[in-house]
Length: 87
Image (cartoon, rainbow, N blue to C red; front, side):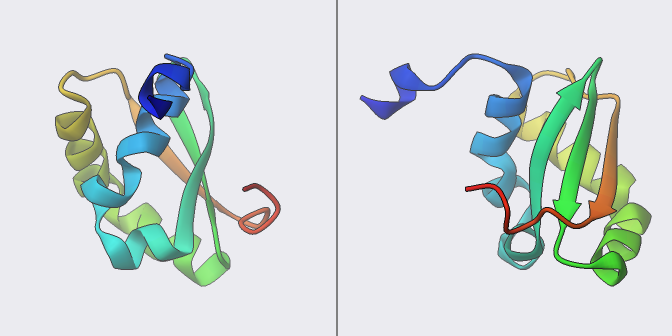
């Protein structure tokens, strides 16, 4: 029932598959928060995680695109802050 209520935006689709695609440890410290033109910004718990995940970005991008079943994303950008501000 709730799947039908979710908006069909790219960001919503990424948020829906994020934890499964990137794995629990990464999902615990990061959250996709915005998308524009195939670039998803991901809020991270702190600068250390943002830097670490930036290094892993090519692998994470491939995993997310595989989980989505197509290739709508061009890039993932990781930034510290606002991690706990959004539900």
